[in-house]
Image (tube, rainbow, N blue to C red):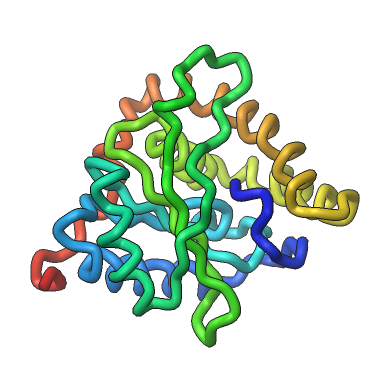
Length: 206
């Protein structure tokens, strides 16, 4: 999570409209970012039914090369109200000795427009951070009994800390804990990131 985005630290009750708005935006961005965008997915807490969340949609764009897309995405995303943020690295899960370079990303954000606020995470196809975002979402979708506990944790945390940086620092290890449970589930069910992504209709491409 980007730690210096100016944003009121508020975790709100789930809004059923989040999913539709995110899918509509994902479709729009998939068209605008072709041919460099391989997939555009709704991720994060707003992608989990019944999950309390900050009222900011998280979307993930999967690409083949981060350096290749920077300039092209700057231009294409400006028309949707996005600006590129300087953040270029994801949190590496605790206990992992993975090369941090494999957790590289790019981030564009949209704030204060008539449309929903958005964090647009751009990650490499097949990278561990692309996979983790999808696994976290899909495990929570498959385990609705875990949603109230995680939502309550976030609500209490938001009231206990004064800024987004502290919120992120405390929440990251909890996400790591969820992933340690999600990994055995992925192996047992045959879950793979490549099969969980939305295939968008070819008719929507330019």
